[in-house]
Length: 523
Image (cartoon, rainbow, N blue to C red; front, side):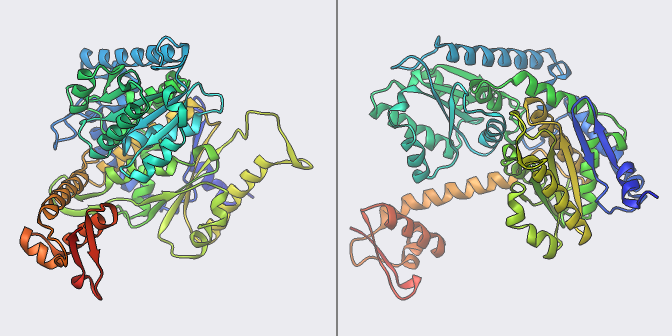
């Protein structure tokens, strides 16, 4: 007699043979009529997605369309101008990469470029990092490096990797607005490094940015090698299939056509308004079920493949920036969102799986399985058993162990890690995020909280400038005294001055028994 779990598996197992993909939601313990109960909300989600793909103004904060789906199907763009922009940009990317590989485009000194330094932050680097780590190889024509923060020690560590190879390095600066300070800082420091090395930076520099942005104007004025557009209807977290991700992928020699086709194939499957045949809406429904539509449980991503190690980091931005919203579409206070974390299997079985099985049940897991173990010849670590067999055993064993302790999980399987399937995975989660946003009645395509943080950071830097002007000589003044002088919060003043004292030899600090008794002065 077949077990009830076997029957449930067959009832809730979805497979796309054309993609080499399957989804198993049978270990999520939703009630039998849950999918039917959600039908009215699902209908709303399907209509919202259809409107978005049709060119609706889905980002009202910026009065913009949201068109990342058109990047892999330009023929679906709402007008011919956008379609041609996509096609022309992709053709230029391919030609530019081919010219770099052939040596037609070459550095100031030397025969060919051997390295790429990508400068960006957030969606401008998370997507390229994930894709290039997942698909890259040791024999790639160029080695990829990243400046993805405004950490000066991080800059130093990356530049130390180059040595004399800086002369063979192509620099790609990515910023939609061109005014993102972290990216601007990395660019300024990089320009200084090239100048110090006697290299003509403009012959090494490429911009990926919005048309007529601050960066676009800077690159044009200084005669950079090339400029590629970031369209205003693309958000950073969904930009990996624009020039943001396609340019570094092409420079690494990856098949960007297959990458786009994998995404397009998943889009075709998940555009269907049939719940049980639509993997993206099923994912969104499982997220809704697990967290009661309130994000009450975390999403743990467990890919059992080293090449997918950065997938959870990529999904953190895609999911959390999209769904982490204070208010719904009607302006009601809702505090929505789903926390995302993860690493890779089976490494995590020696890390936090202990808590997943026996600790606080505040999560649901998503296992990601890759059927193909390796591209090279099969090797047995013991009679009849390979390392890949062990990896599969650990995935299935961990899934069973969680289920035995009433911990829920989803399992996604792909045939192999290649450009096609990685494109399909990204497209799946992009659409699932959009569907979930509609299910809980929020806007998944703006990010007001990020802008609030940028504004606060700008105010801190303005405070720092005022404090430097007001600092006295010894014996100095306390943070509270200086705060009264400049009209600021004493704690903010204290932390700014501590930072300055640690990094600027012109600023001194005398420690007291309490922070309020510390004195700051100009040396």
